Image (cartoon, rainbow, N blue to C red; front, side, top):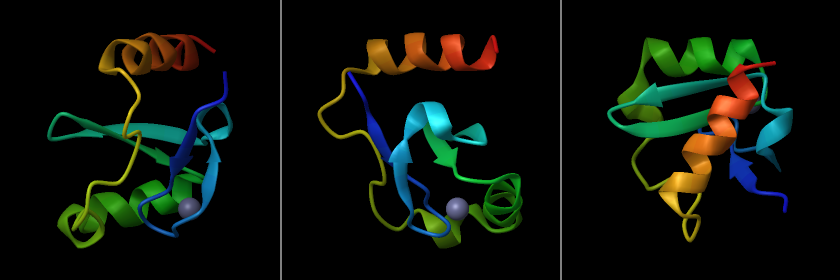
Length: 73
Ligand SMILES: [Zn+2]
C-alpha cells in the first residue's frame, strides 16, 4: 500500500518511501522531497505547520513501522 505524504515546505505530494528525509517535530513526522526543504523547515518550523499536514487516516503504528524501515536503508 502506498502512503502519500505532503512536503510541508514546498507542498509537493509523494509516496513517503521517496522522501529524501524524515523529521520528527513535536511528535509529528514530516516528510521532505529534498534535504533543502528539510533545512528550510528547521529554520522556521512553525511557519510550515499551520495546519495538520500529513497522514490523516493512517494508523500511527504503521507510520512508525514504515519509518523504521525507511531509516534502516
Ligand atoms: Zn519539498
